[in-house]
Image (cartoon, rainbow, N blue to C red; front, top):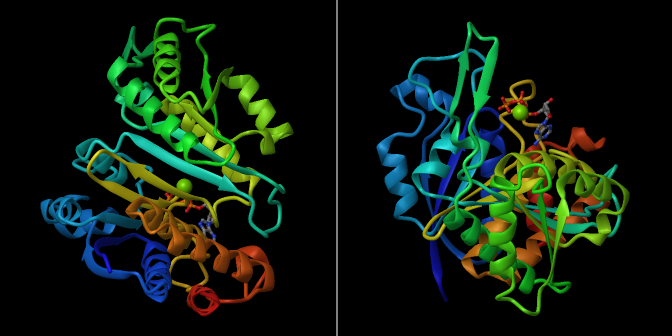
Length: 334
Ligand code: ATP
Ligand code: MG
C-alpha cells in the first residue's frame, strides 16, 4: 500500500480547529499518511518575524502535499509582513487555483450544481504593479498575461474537463474589451483545449458567465479564467452551493500543491470550537484526489454529505455541534 507524507499548517484563528478536525477524518480513511506539522501565517510572523519561515518552505517541498488552515492578514500595513498563501503561490509556482462548487445538503445550496472554477494563479492584475501620478489623481495598475501561463492553465483545465463525465470547458474572458491581454489568454487556452478533442470547449464573456451562473449554474462543468475574474467568480460559485463553511480549494503546481478552505481565520469565532470544518475536510478530500486516492476522496465526500444531511451540524448551519463532534461524526460515517 502506498504511503504519503502530508504537511499540515494550521495557520491562524479557526485554522487551529479545522485542521485537526480534517486530520481526524483523513486518519479514518485508512490511507497511509504521515503528518508533518509546519508553521505559517500572522501568529508565526509575530513570533518569528516572517509569515513563512524557511523551514516551512522546506517541509512543503519535501512532502507529497500540504493542507493549510487559514492565515489572518492585518488590515493595516505592517512592515515586513506578507500574506502566507500568496507567498507560497508565487514561491512554489502554484499556478492553478482550483475551486469546486458542488451541491451539498446545506441551506441555500442550489441542486444539481457540480462545477469547478480554475483560476490562473500567478499573473493578471495580481502582479501587483500599481502606481499613481499627479498627487494621487491618476492611478494605474498593470495586468500581465503570458502565453506560457495561459497555456499551462489551459492545459490543466482541459485535462480536468476530460476527466469529468460531462467533459465541458468554458473559457471566461473579456476579450471584446481587452483584445490584447484577454485575447491572448482566450486564444492560448482555446488552442490548448483543442488538443483534447473529447472536450467540448466554448468561450464565454465573463459578465455573461456571471449571469448564466446565477440563472443556470447546473449547466456548467469546468470554467477557466484569469486571476481577478477567477477570484470573483469562485466566490460567486461558492455562494451558489452554501457559502464559506463548505468551500474547498487547491493551489496546484507542477511539483507541489497546497489545499485550503476558502474561508479565512474567522477571528470572531476562533477559539470557541464551533467552526464548521467541512471546507477543510473537503479540501483534504481534494488533496487525496490529487495524490491519486480517488476512492478515499469520494468516501469522504459521501460521509460529509451524510452528516450534513442527518446532523449533527455546526452552529453556522443551524446546529449545535462542535467542530470536533462534526468531524467525529464524519469519521464514524466513513
Ligand atoms: P480573514 O481576515 O482571516 O479572512 P475574516 O474576518 O475575513 O478573516 P472569514 O474567515 O473570511 O473572516 O469569515 C467571514 C465570516 O464567515 C465570519 O463571520 C466567520 O465567522 C464566518 N466563517 C468563516 N468560516 C467559517 C467556518 N468554517 N465556520 C463557521 N463560520 C465561518
Ligand atoms: Mg475573509
